[in-house]
Amino acid sequence: MRFDRDEHGDWFVDPGDLARRLGLTSGDLQRQMRLGLVTSRLERGSEEDEGRLRVTVRVGSTAWQGTFNEAGQLISESLLP
Image (cartoon, rainbow, N blue to C red; front, side, top):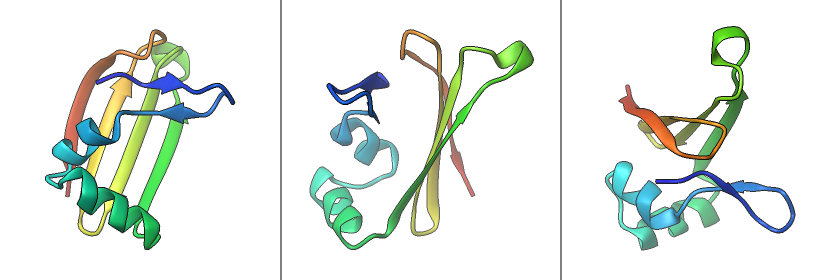
């Protein structure tokens, strides 16, 4: 999984990769997004985590969190309660 920027500078991940990590199909994730049931948060690291980004995506009672390095490579991930 990679964390990249689009032509407008907005961050994105592959929706299929994200859906699988959340235990959903791509279609289910898209439906949840259209209904406004997907939330996300982006945090920039500081001090010893400088240059890292932590992304948290929540759908219903399931949340996935990934930490990415400066190159956009996933370096750790977990499901949250």
